[in-house]
Length: 322
Image 1 (cartoon, helix red, strand yellow):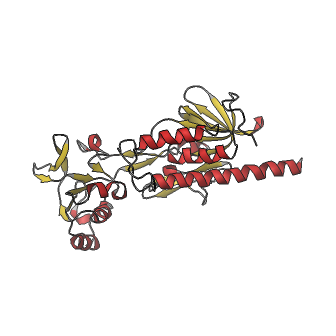
Image 2 (cartoon, rainbow, N blue to C red):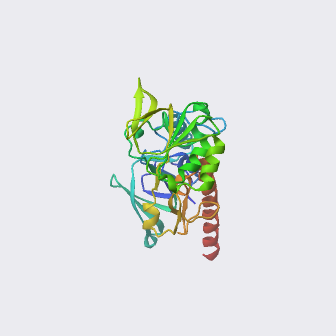
């Protein structure tokens, strides 16, 4: 096991390469650095929560901006000799003939080698193509009531339906406001089940059919939802359900098994985040749609701890065999 006594060794050989520098990747790197493993974090700088001004629900970090959170994380891992490079991992392969398990090719032209990998590349949110939605996402166009519900409590909510599952979103956000309207948009009325209609009625959610044409914005504030027929409904917050696109390219190149979910295909993992590819772990939104920042950090910790034990036992077994 390599000990981090001399940070910034440029040999390109690491115990662990962490691909992704968000909450999961930095949390994993912190544990790995403290465990005296030579670790590199490859960060493309594309955190999922970048549009948000603050993050919520993380004990002692409630209300902190995502940018500040990541900056503090980078400072912490540097104390333990963990290296971080601003780059993108574009390919990965096994290189067992050279004695290292993996070769990671970076967009900048560098190739680094690692005995173990943690892939925390997250996912991308594809937003509904309604004018104004992308521009206001993370401000008054939101997707998660646990992330933002308290801050917009008791305001006039709209929910933009893109699939029948949007009914669930409307029911959930009704816990934060008594004034909720579900705009069916691309969902036909007959796609709603009798149970859907009964629950919506019980929650006091108004259902409005018809395609949404755009948002009304006045003085940089969302004030309404405009339908294709020209009618405008006063709303100050709109919840949407982005389509999740997991960034699984690297794991697919290595042959990781994926499983289909209602929110995309994600790697099959054990409780520590170990994938079906020996030596490869994952954490955060790379392993599931619903991973919040606090879950991602926890998952990164678990994956790193598992890798520390894996490497120790692997080295001991090699010593015994030798």
